[in-house]
Length: 52
Image (cartoon, rainbow, N blue to C red):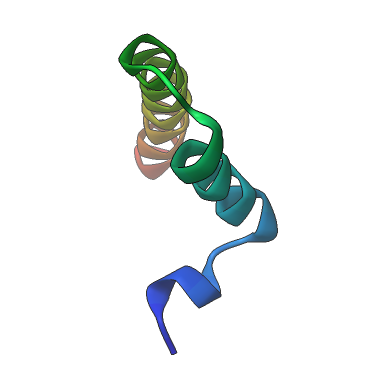
């Protein structure tokens, strides 16, 4: 089974959107910043729980 097949539906939709509908580098960079922000935020939350 491919890694893609194991991903949640919402992630698959996001990747499909990026591949099919993003038509500019600016839009792609905006999406990248947003995704990176939420990943960093969640990573900090999870690392904070380790210290408990």
